[in-house]
Length: 576
Image: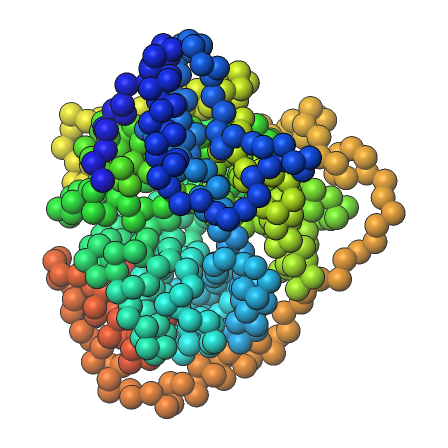
């Protein structure tokens, strides 16, 4: 669909506003709507969107606009959630693949719309469960996945051809993805039809989460290979979910989360362009992952600003011409860092408020944290409460009836503008570190700035300073957290929490050992040797080679180690 790159004329004059309203109405009328009751609890008919009164002039209205129109401040679709509600995508993973599969089937049976895989720490770091580095960590913060056989168990009785699946993993994302493809093939699924999301965002690992395998350049090579492969072979699959969530959880402000995340996204756009990819072919496969924190209005403004910034930069800076290339589609998770071990039942309230902010900000999918996640992995009961929180919001509150219901609020529009301006200032700083637009860049000016900021500690120090300032405000009592530094008396007792038995690690290691005994060792050796040779060559896509190793039952640790022989390791310089 051709895009009106700078948008149709929709200034603040009365005629422009009415012309925009008419365009929106035509698109709304032509769009598919859900068969649902779009009235208030009292039976009052509700308009699908609200805007200025007829004849009104609103200076700057072109920055607000109408849902489904550039710059998408008010959402990507003219129908809002009347066309399609957000996807309930609960993040889950613990113990071994069999245990997590049971949780997945519970989520899907109770109304979940998609799956989101949480991996344990050894998997996130590219280690097998029997590695010395994995001791005591197997299955504790997510599910252990050592080979394609674990992927088979993880998605047992879950048809991958019909289920959108997100995987939150970055360093070893590509081998994990190839194992997922192997599991789909074994189910008889045509992998070219798969739909889902792989996180793959290595920039945020260096910036905040610190779960990398290799130095930045080879990691970017793998990401570029993945982008090429998906664009060519699995067009509906999203190979990158650019993540601000972990940046915010590390202590960043809303403006820093917004700016660093979108800068990372621009870096991946530059990576695709440097590979010779057509921006209007690969850009729609980029998605985003944001935190929804406890400051209600600031979070809504952040999401609206993100859409507007992305659309403008994709059009004006990178030359995208299709509408879907300008769309910032994003998943949201409520703020884990906002949960408290003190008075943990209060976390249900916090999560509901944060979820509502994400919805009013126009999220495309949503995960709600469980009340006990600050203490342990969620129990089945707390996971159900988290799921029901979204369903109460969706079914009872009326928030899906009207697109961008807070649009036009003086407060919200001012916050949106302020966050956008803050982000632009940070973009300028990042690009300056890389030499600016006039310098020569191997990939692009934003990418050069990000790599420089990783190397010189810019991101780490900026986030640390923000976290320190917030902690000082808490200790002084300027910022308040109920149950922590105010209203601390309580009648609630301790929670029963989910505990992962040490038997999980023992059994996982035993299963891995037995698989190694049963597999064709010669086929594994050949596949790993081919992968090693491919990694040594500067050109050539590594995805098919990694897929062959996964099909042969090579383990995650073996695949990552083979590439590591060529790519080396990355060590962050300590900075104080």
